[in-house]
Length: 140
Image (cartoon, rainbow, N blue to C red; front, side, top):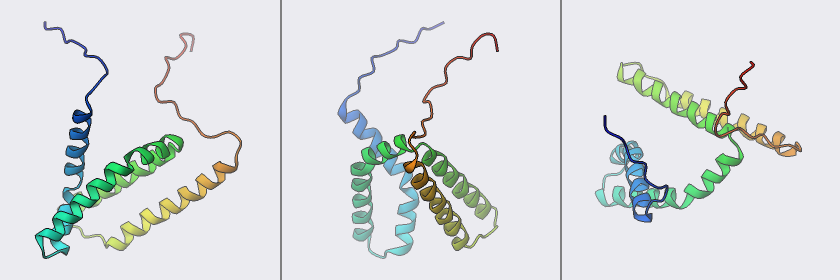
């Protein structure tokens, strides 16, 4: 049986930037496909993708901080991923959904969440979710 060695928690800046760039590339493939459908010039597509990756890299910290302050946003984002995933699978199976329905559902959900955030902002105690679950007491 081989033992795995645990390395320290430090990583290089280049490694982090490479990982972010790779993730951005993977997740922007749908944007690339959309750009191919919308733009006729390759230079326009390349410039649009480079600008979007730069914006994502610059906004990552502030978005992370916002999501940490408002953990229900994570659930909203996961529900959007689920909605998009189900829509893509259905369209792959030949069922067409009008895009307006999808966009309306997302906009409505964001609107409801914004109202919830405003209401919670007025409360004295903010909502905090635990990042890790402590072990349950042994008598329960």
